View 1 (tube, rainbow over the protein chains, first blue to last red):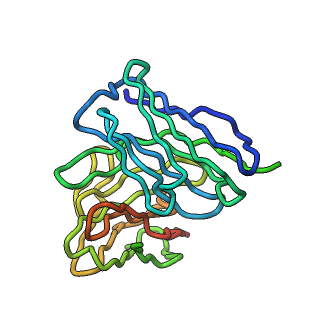
View 2: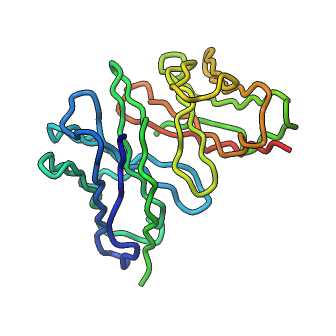
Length: 122
Length: 108
């Protein structure tokens, strides 16, 4: 059964870089049928798409975050990673990793990790 | 930027039909998807491509889309359906995917 698990520091200082990894088990990240993405949710608020990566390394980002986001993939370790630079308190959120099923020109998130809370504070 | 607009809250009694709407300018040309998120949990896909149900999702969940509005319908809502519901779609270019602001469904 597919599982996604986020890992990384739960506390990051302002102006530093947030780094998270999503480890995929029960399935291969090396598939042309899926993207692998990051979504976040500030406490008490809605969902915001951050960006996706394809197994080939192609990336797609939310324009509002693009200048600060890096997403990478390591197919040998079956995991992908998120880096968000120059963080502020506004970046405090639960960060979810998810698999995105590709259907023609569309994609949608069909499996999600449990999420990990990252707090930005000094 | 692109926005999908949902009502903040919907309330029904158990057994009644709950309808949650999502409006967006690109919906006439883009599929809508719906997610259910219970408190403290990850979202779960309940409707994809406007009206299809993933396996394991009860038949009381259905979806439809017409013009600039997509609708999630829960026929005979149950207490366990209490959750936040988010619509999801893409802008007209397909380069930006967004979630609606979410609708809190209360069943009591």
